Image 1: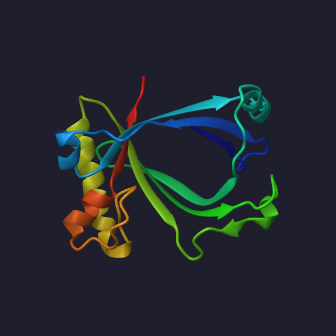
Image 2: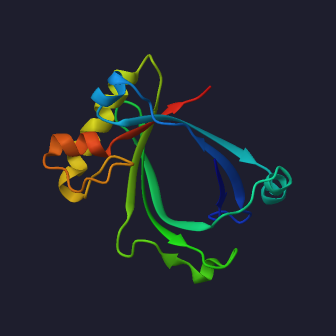
Image 3: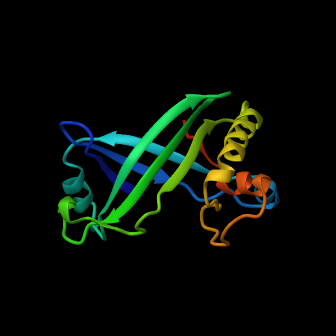
Length: 165
């Protein structure tokens, strides 16, 4: 569970994001991507107070800066390029320190369902093939280093979000 605050607007917008566990089993190992469900929900500005009253505690704050764009291949595909910084003191974004200086996180995602899964997989894999020469690619959660071929890199890079109704 992630509680996120979008600071790019005049009034901050709060979002709760639930990222489900990765798909498991023999079929999941054959897929070229990490597939998991993602649910985003906008909530009111009293988010911190609400989560505190539920018993949650703020472990740490991260500041994610960068940009995001979306384009339409077969389906809308979202690409985000961000740098992640740790905030040493609560809410002091001016003091943010990069976690990995000089490195950016590139995430590729697309919503899919059982009806269009094959087309979405092909579109995201095609984009990953195009990005392979430009990036150090790895599948989320796998710290194996540089992947040897563009095809393997495409498999490592792609990560799709399954839209939860």
